Image (cartoon, rainbow, N blue to C red):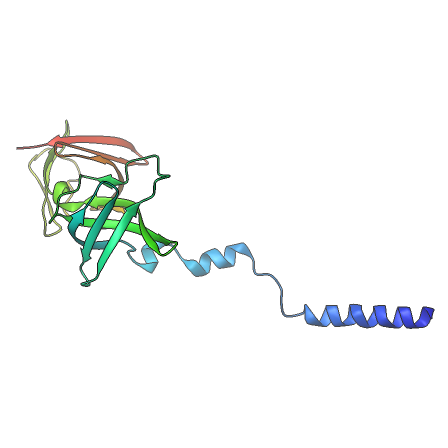
Length: 185
């Protein structure tokens, strides 16, 4: 009886040892490296024209011709849409899908972003063609280009989070601090 018990136990241990041989867990670091960062994988922003909008939604006609409805998550405690909602305005939306619906993580009104912006040390114009022109000759490292990349505003080599965007004010933040601009003439 005792021999049978030891025989069965040794077979069980042997089977377990061989079955786990090739199923070693991968390290977390290798999974992160395989995923890559957002810059190397591409822009996850959806671009398009707002065709209809409500208090908690935006219906977007994307650049690819799709019509998507993005909802504001009711659990969000911060303003998701930057720059207001006006039909016909161009938007850049970072979203996610949950329970079959599209939700906005952030939405930037690109039409509101365009135009002249001034501060104490900068005076520049964001143009629709992706260029930025500076009006100050004394400006150090003037910005020359802009784009939205994964929900962030990239001005030449500087990357910013858009904290607020209104008809007459723009607040940008990066590791260097908070930068506030007012609408120029």
